[in-house]
Length: 148
Length: 387
Image (cartoon, rainbow over all chains, first blue to last red; front, side, top):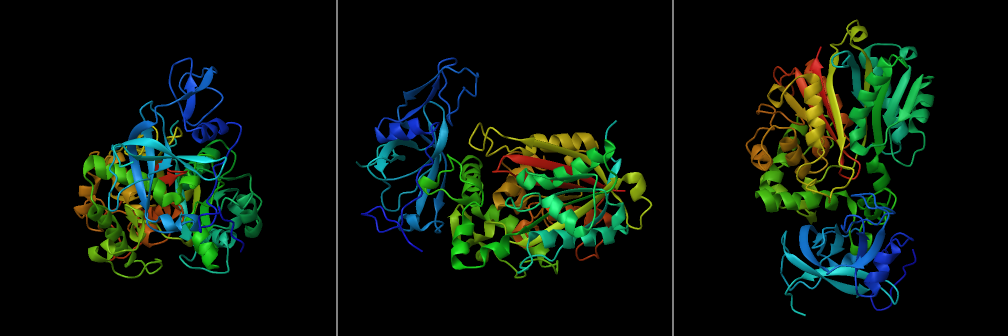
């Protein structure tokens, strides 16, 4: 089996985001380090996942607008067993459901924890950006007030 | 006119369970269906409907099953609502008969999940991740993989909001293992202690190996016909008294679906159709993909208040002689995982009083069965009554 690498990391290439016409603005905004989500002009709600019309009021007047990048941990799990070799060196790592202050919830990974530090439900988090390569960036989250 | 008690399960069976290499899901399905027809004591020429489900990558599963059974059928389809499908197959059978489309319907589910994931080490690792097509927001780029993690979000939130403990999840795992030890066909045969549970191999916290259902080669089948016709057969008919289904299709992350699942509205419909309350249920055959989902459903089915499912499980209520004997064949955690079909089989056997005293729930006349799945948001419920 051939193993692709990202260069510096010795681990195999991780799964990349599934980037389609509908999802591209999310990933482009993460790459620009200014995360945007679909924002309904009809009812004012941010929503997720992106769609052609607002799932709350069905308005088709949607713009992609920047979010504050702050929120809280709605829930989290801690991976202790390898599912994919690309993540082996990160074990154990925490995948979170983040609830942004604007409302939407989606998955990300918690980063920047001190040794032995354990996340909690409802803990305040903020976005940080990690480049997979020169065009693709993951919006990760860290606990607010974490050491920079 | 309500369908309640007008249709019945007249026969049931499983295939060999657990590790059945070299067979495949279609053969497991036909093995269970053939035994099911024998259990009912009819000739296969009377069967004119097939509603079933197999692995997602087998196109037209129902057709291939009927082909091997050597029958043409008036009504035939594959169900696609994950672990909620199996109860829906039985409900659809009753509806199809009521609509005059058919008369005697074979329902069932089969999978060969153990064989598929044990061919090689690569298959073992790949098998841990979800076997479904990749979804744009499935989170793999963040390291998110598999059903245990998705359900684990709910478990973690329940622990944070209600103080549910790891030992309470363990009580579920231990209760079902104890039942499996009484079932000679169960995949798991070793006794378990709480220390074994707490020491089990970590998977994705808060779940370890013993919080997660099994990978199994397994199938189960039921034969549905009018209650009137079923009364003429040798076995005691099992009446389909009520069913319900609900789907939190807006998602697991929306509102508080992780804590109050689709089981709540689904079970309400089933209770109402059957005209019973939770206190009337003699045995609960619950969809136990993960220990937490049992605790959530104990609450959502009204057997205890929201937030008290952990304490309820730890009280010993789930034991064969407990207040609510649950998953009396061992469940998906210890008998075998066949997406909920074995729960229906066990409910039928319990209310028919098929077992000797070592496995029989005393005076079991009403069983509640649950089915859950479809990426954590789909649910179905069924009340089965001794006819």
